[in-house]
Length: 454
Image (cartoon, rainbow, N blue to C red; front, side):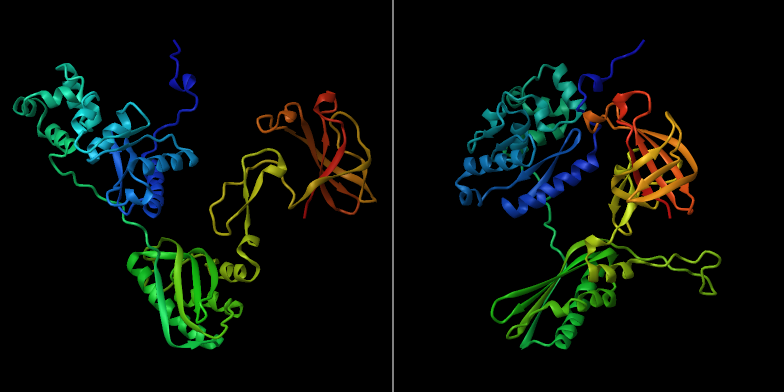
């Protein structure tokens, strides 16, 4: 017997990911800290983190009142692609309950009206334990209003003091501790000068002192730099920014200093620079590095691989980080879609094993002229490419590659037959014929050169 899967009825469902939800909510909280309120906390429901508490006390008037502010937050969530529900209440527990179980997407509870607003809601709105919810259902407590109307003594004996605490917190009789999100402040240092400086040597000396301060803070916080921003504040109020990045998190002060000094010539000091501000705009956790503890001071037969990060950083500082990358594999049989640029030191997918691929691909593939080949599956005997005649002495193939119909509807019947061939001069080419040689729907039988072997 085959039982139906819930995914068949709801194909857009995804398995729960509490860690991913927490990371997303943390990013939203950082945005809310900058836009709405200095006090934000992440709420946790029965299935994990599921929302945000925003303390708007003392700030709602800056946005035109509670209702206007709530509407603006709701529109912001909609523009960000979220289906949000909001509630404004005098207690965190009441806001949590009304946002999830209230009758509307936006609920405003007047001051002191928590009991009336919560009365028609079910007991799970109080964030009760599963056993308490089941017990309340068995005993006929279908609403929070029924719990409020019951004597507290029997209620505590039946459900425990935690239910009374949740009820009191929602009604404002008991305070509820909330752990707010601490806004992330990037490590930074500001260095002011008694007299303005203007020479490259003076700027480099000041950078050394600022870098020592910054790396000390990074070490104390267990962080490494991925992106640095140097801002030179001129006496005329102008700012001269210099940005550098690293391939791997680091707090190596001499290395970071070299990257910045490479860009000093781009700074225009004008009438002088009165201060510099150095900020680690992007950081990553960086712990202690494990070193060899052998008596001989060596690594035995397996020396560590050389650290290419400093070299990559210096090259990127000269030609630009976007021009420096490695090639990573992509899950696609179509050759031009099977590779992508990847960070120089990033993790890439394993390269598939099978037919050899040329070191150089032509983009786009170039059409061949005067091709002589037998159908349906023989490699060509000769062809003309860029005006030069090539006579094939050996060949291998075909390797058949079908179109990816899920990407483009026009590729539903498309077929390419690839061949590796070698001409009389020893040059090796990777070429293909469009179509399988039998069905005209698969291609027009034209030949194209797609790559050259080294």
